[in-house]
Length: 608
Image: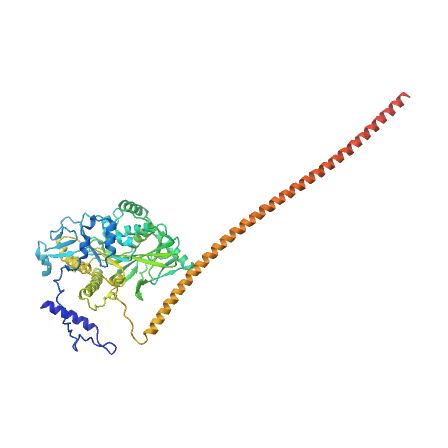
């Protein structure tokens, strides 16, 4: 009886959300008092199950059965299983603890957790927590599973398929979410490994300059001024990242030892990789990669400038953060430097549960743009979200600002749970479902692509298997059980059937044609410019070769003419020299004769 009343109250809440009007008539299944009239051909109580248990159906194949003993499968087999599934993949990771509770047991299949009541039953305040409950996951990782195995099973198939996806790490405070996502320099998490994997895959095609980026959710080509600004911003941020080279060398060495990433043989494609990093603190979005403010020597003692709150904009189904700082990166070293630099600005605080507790949700974005020679640009987005831990006031004893932070964290996580719950109900009822309330929280607004089925969703649930956190773990496991049963499907867009619909369709088709023609004009311009540059290069080469040939011919003719002129001058010189020689010889002969005549005359005079 209680189940039937709850079902009718849920249907009544659905009907109350849609009030009749002149433009929208009342549904015939609802009476004047807005009481639902269920279809006689549908039994409303067939699919109602006890709360806290996972749904099992013998007619339909359970997705979790495909992941039994998943750690023993090769990477290629895992990737095929992940790609063919439209369901949200939910994994459970148990934190290594010294006093593990007997209330948590993993079945022999390796993907089902049995949670029974702890030995101290007084610690549970809810009757349903005193019952043994079974929770199915895509895989369960105990304390013996290493970071590289978690990445190989959960993330590597998504990266290799080149599909956009969102990764969530969820759990209580201090359960190891940040360690799973980031790790340490000697034991890196899934984000450093994913960065190395992405750059290794596209190593031969990364473009040297940030010539193309996402602006307002659309791929666009940057002009020279915008390109210069991006290069300047990139150099400023990289200069701010210091003393991180040793960490990256250790990270790269560890990842290279654990994995053997392959480079894709991509031809005639240019790859542009952009990153951005934000946090959601008290339902406000802040940029973690904002460039540092330049301070003069006189203002160095002043307090730091307040951070600027960013606005989330949804335009034509595309979500983007207005004013965020995307940075163009060329290597994994630059990416990890900027990631660690952004982590220095994350809001952390100490609580009674965790000495270094994150007080905000952090989301790290990696956008990979591939521009093919045909003019087609493909954008792939990877989101890594480190959710803040859910907290109970009785355990944390937060007051003041810590209490305000805890309220914001729990509210956003509750909204995320509502979104998953609505998606699960839409799948169960198989009727016209409710609208998923993604706009009620900044977190769900940024993750709406995954919540609406436009991207793949992977969730890694972290649990501390001790009796002290039993009630918190039950809430986390119920949350994950809802996500595990969801198969996301992108909702169909409603068709406008008004008398002006043909005008709207015509305008829409004209706008799409204009956009296509503009992109085609840009492509033809770039192609023509390339052809002109190539033709100019060929003509320049031909002119240089022709000039060099003519210069060589002229030089040869000039040398021959000089040689002929030299020979002529030599002959003239020889002739003149011979004439002078004969002239001087005649003069010498005459002078000799005159001398001899003089000597004879002198002898005659001496004799007389």
